[in-house]
Image 1 (cartoon, rainbow, N blue to C red):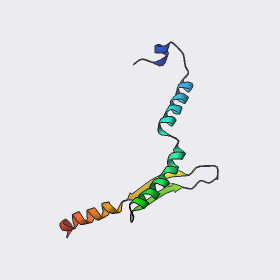
Image 2 (cartoon, rainbow, N blue to C red):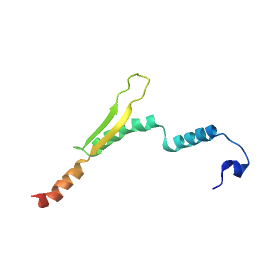
Image 3 (cartoon, helix red, strand yellow):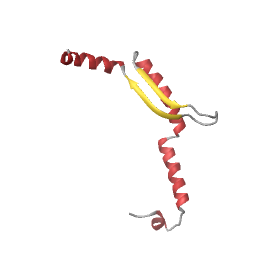
Image 4 (spheres, rainbow, N blue to C red):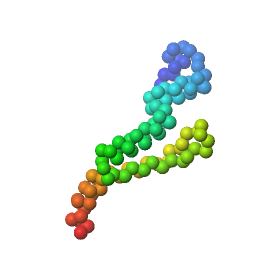
Length: 94
């Protein structure tokens, strides 16, 4: 394994390397708050495209208006999948 300081003959601190890695990961994965806001849009779109489906987002409300909400879990149940399992398993269970 070749390290940056050996490859380019420079010295960087662990702090600078860690901050640079965090910035790169944030650029690749996106901001957590932006992703959380997209969850609600995703659920609305699922409900529009699959009528009768259910989608629930569970999160902890922020105590202060400046703090973001904390995401806990997401539950999605698509109506076509439920109907397919009932139709397919009815012969076996009945």
